[in-house]
Amino acid sequence: SGYQRVLEENRKLYNQVQDLKGNIRVYCRVRPFLPGQPNRSSSVDHIEEGNISIIAPLKYSREGKKSFTFNKVFGPSATQEEVFADTQPLIRSVLDGYNVCIFAYGQTGSGKTYTMSGPRELTEEGQGVNYRALGDLFLLSEQRKDTICYDISVQMLEIYNEQVKDLLVSDGVNKRYPSRHYTLEIRNSSQNGINVPEANLVPVSTTSDVINLMNLGQKNRSVGATAMNDRSSRSHSCLTVHVQGRDLTSGSILRGCMHLVDLAGSERVDKSEVTGDRLKEAQHINKSLSALGDVIYSLAQKSSHVPYRNSKLTQLLQDSLGGQAKTLMFVHISPEPEALGETISTLKFAERVSTVELGAARVNK
Ligand code: ADP
Image (cartoon, rainbow, N blue to C red):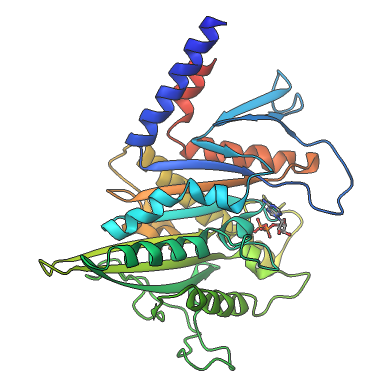
């Protein structure tokens, strides 16, 4: 009806304005069912632009459905290329001197690593945001080479149990990088924007440089893990891209920095069932994810106090969260009905940090 259309237009307009205004964007991505899984019905009822509606039993919603609004929702058939296309402008702004943070949030198995890196057997079309982002920065810096000379380098860190480790360290075979296996310090006041000065900083200029480093980082990340005990889902990994551009006419320098973060699994661990190391890990993950949520929430609320100091993760990202920096959170959900509890808590987390949710939801009703 006409009324519906007006509401729809209002909502679109509202979202567009929010897109321009807010520095915090939230994209939701739904993983497809995996090959070999029995055919089942998805807990996603429908997806329309920025809206996603979930089939929720009465425990969660009186209507039997629950809707959420984000800047964008990618359904199970969205390709890596499509996801990247909507991320590209943000990434490109790093070359203009902006700081950017991109997160992948969601329960273990929901597709975080797929979005950021890609599937385990990596193909070119499977490449995730990390590879495409660097490839795009190389391309764009090449296009600008007559006016600006760019240096691009990367660090790769892991935060596990509130300790920061370097992932770009020698693996015994590859001796090119010094090994630093101890816990690193975060220093937020550095002049060059490098806040973990001890971590290896590696210049990159080609896609194959990036592939080699990602492989090394991946290898180092899984040290100590076994099939039953996959540490990577219980640590945060962060690929940080440092960009320095020198204007060839004026000689002035600009700096930009981008953090690409694959977060630890957000699933609630039943505290009555785990003890020892697992309990400690779960507590650290809880603490850091809620610290991250609190930081983004206070930024979204334009609050005067932003609690960066509450976790290593938020400390690490401090210079790239808030101010002129741009933030994008990919929230991932699994389609399986068994995952519904986690799916709903993931969407609620995302809704809390999102700047579209309130107004848009109201207009939409
Ligand atoms: P997480 O990092 O959240 O633990 P993964 O990225 O490892 O989850 O994804 C779990 C499994 O699902 C992997 O086998 C991955 O390749 C597959 N997968 C995730 N997202 C997609 C997608 N969008 N399309 C196809 N397969 C996917």
